[in-house]
Length: 424
Picture 1 (tube, rainbow, N blue to C red):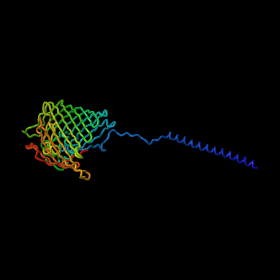
Picture 2 (picture 1 turned 30 degrees about the vertical axis):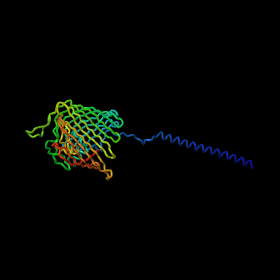
Picture 3 (picture 1 turned 180 degrees about the horizontal axis):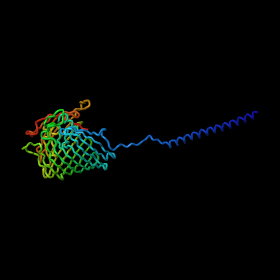
Picture 4 (picture 1 turned 90 degrees about the vertical axis):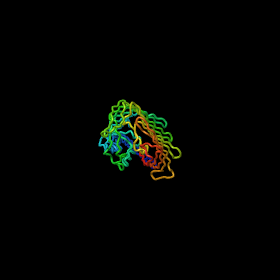
């Protein structure tokens, strides 16, 4: 009896073991089938959630195509508009613009931009109609626009023209030094803008009717065309606290077809505009250097020079001008001009570190020396200015004197000026 019971128990264990093995095998096969089925599903329906997008090479800056406007006593509001074409990481960068000039009522077209065939090479070009000046070195666009709008002080003379310019430049860099030589050509057709007694001038907060402010006339330029070759270099140095920038350009006229513009001169009056020569060579140099001295004190020098040679005087559209708070404070605004010019200014700045004002920082004391002159066919004696000023952030007030015993008829004994320096 006991033997039969033992045999029956053993056979039951064996049968249960087979069932357990079969069940385990079935579960394993089911899991493998599920994995294989999942892999097949992934292969059959790949993920399509990622898509590659390409931006259009044509864009409208600021969303509508507007560019930074300017304001002056000739154009009024100059508002550029147009699309920008940019390809291959800015190797092709072209602006097709229409500039509306509110005081002139003109719509001036232009095409300008740059082509960069290599990392160090650049071809810049401009083709269009516009209002041009040789005096942009005195103040930047933003500062000059603010001065013209608020106090009627425009430190530029202007003329109108059609122009086509191209220049090829190559950049050479080393430790702290960047040199960019360039060569190119220029073709232009010029005419005068404004008049000897302008009756219409743009609006300004102050100085709207001042003869030396918004109603200051432009010099008449020689009417006609100039074809010339240009070359030069830009040099920039940054070494420790030293920052220096130099720009040099040489223009050689190839062909000139010009005649004096004496429109607006009363009947019987004398047209004093110099006769332009058949050919001219003009060099323009501009330099700015600044460096620290003791503690937080700094010294800065800026200089501008124009020299002309040739068979005659350069045309008036190549003249440069001096005078006013931004150059010689004791001289009337742009009262000195010609195809020869020299201007040098040194500023020593002493911050008052013990005073810290909210948002604008420490005020400072500024000591200034300036000397310059300009003329036609030669350089007259230099006019000197000595000044002391007090400033904070971008605003500065100066008291300036002319120390000469016998002063130029264009220079006063002293002047008090308030200047603003803005930059983007």
